[in-house]
Amino acid sequence: MTETQNVMDQYLKAAGITELPEDLTEPRAAANVTHEPRARRNSYERCVTATRLWNSANNDEQRLHVIRDYASSDSSIPGLAELMQSFLLPGLHRLPPSEIEYAIDELGLTAPDNTVLLKAERQALDVDGYVNLGVLLDEDQLSRMRVRYDNAIEAESPQTRYDGIGRINDTVICSMNHDGLLDPLFMHPRLLAAVRHLMGIHTKYIGSNYHCPLPGYGHQGIHADYIWGVEGSPEVVNAVWMLDEFTEDNGATRVVPGSHRWGRHPTGDLVNGEPRNAKDEVEGQVLITGRAGSCFVYNAHLWHGGTQNRTLQLRRAQHTFFSRSNRPSSTDVPAAIDQVVFERLGRVERAILDIGPEHITRF
Ligand SMILES: O=C(O)CCC(=O)C(=O)O
Image 1 (tube, protein in one colour):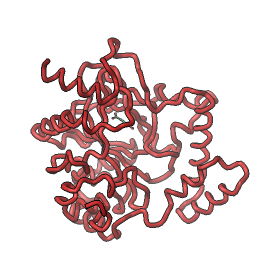
Image 2 (tube, protein in one colour):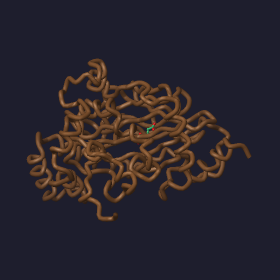
Image 3 (tube, rainbow, N blue to C red):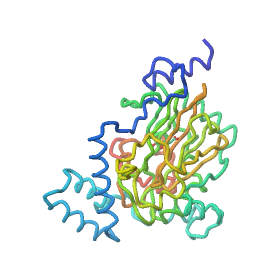
Image 4 (tube, rainbow, N blue to C red):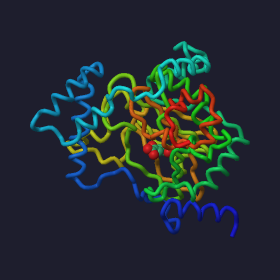
């Protein structure tokens, strides 16, 4: 058995499939698509209601009032008000704000017009909702990262599998980043400059995952990385690191330029009077292609999704997710962080992760 076959076999096991499909073009296992009409209508109504409630207020205090009023109405959707309130709880940041202010200053990002991002890049983020920051990883980093992910894929893949996707959660804070190889994926100053541009200084890391569609897989429903539509400046920002080149054929991410400005979530959108079928194409969508080592950053309310990998190679990518400091995390960082990783991190890195020794009782 060749080394390449061996690696592919490990990905097959990790992605919960036994063999690669013969027809690579047929989209299968679009993980985040609801097919049942009643369920799709319910998700639509829930999403539209949440979007309306969130955007009907200008600040969190007003939002809490609006949501409490909604919760006391007879027609409220079960669980929705509680979910929305959980985004508005006090004390969701762990460190005092002065820590992230210190880190942003150390990184040279305090001034909104800092020179780490070009003016044109800031404009692309504002207008299109995304920017490709270009190649930020060199060949040596890339090849070492690919080996690191390939070696970890079987042992580290989560219990809940997405068919046909090699996945590892919490990559940058787990033991596979014991030596800092993956640190640039959450600490690169150009990435953090984009995060700072979109959300200001008071931001934090909220999750990271490796995402590798296998040949014949990868088509996702169009989605946004938030539960409802948000008007105005974003609550969340995401980055996709291309560990392999993204091409027209290998499952490059599709995005709908400008959709972050619609204040609408794809789940809460109608097409010909019916809730949108997320797996369909969206008018105006484009593919983000780019060289290996590139990082594309997007306002995570932008409509986007993975596409079908129609080649016989892996499409390896790493996502790194950020939010405002006062919002909940996707990952429980204190519970997930590896001791060796935590101990080697300095003040700036810990501020980005919003974590200090007082938050960890495990070691
Ligand atoms: O990796 C990609 O192309 C996009 C994946 C994505 O949007 C997701 O997993 O939510």
